[in-house]
Length: 255
Image (cartoon, rainbow, N blue to C red):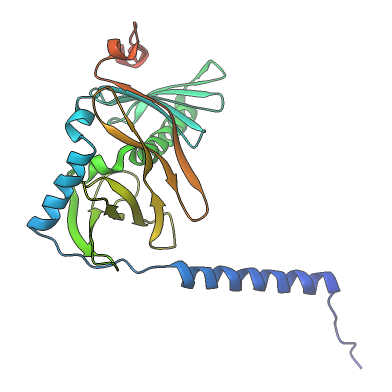
């Protein structure tokens, strides 16, 4: 008679634990996943987008040449908007990046890296910048090339603005549904993005700061599981107004 094979109790427990985790994850997905609503495009959607841009002072943002911020206390940026250059720092890395060309210089612990290793860090810095600069001032990008806008009615009958990105950044095709206050200033948005499997995840836009140029920036985004903050925020219309006596991007401008 063949002896029946048995499994250790701990292995049975571990298998049951993973089954439970999968069940809980599936339940959470089904509970929180929200189908992207269909909106109505047209003049009303365009007008609502313009109202949002006015509320955040888009002209003030356009006149801002240099802006500094730290995202989630991890990635720190000094961004020259007019020349499309940025300095990115995290851990012991410092990168000077030409945003349009995705090229630049990399230092690790103050030692310059070269070749493929440097370019890999440049690529990572560019991806960080795409994400973190969007969180810095996403409302200002609602009428960028490659975007479309539509109006979605909320449960309480208010107009919300759906902005869909057909191109640009790291994950084109993402969509954001903005809930606005009476003056058009964002209160929150829901996201349908490729990097997050759960649709309709909502983050607030609050703790608004005003730059010297007049641009309004939300410094806190509270979500269901994590809060994303914008720290060390500073901006100016020129390098001189910012307090920079020397151009921090000269090492990549000389090339």
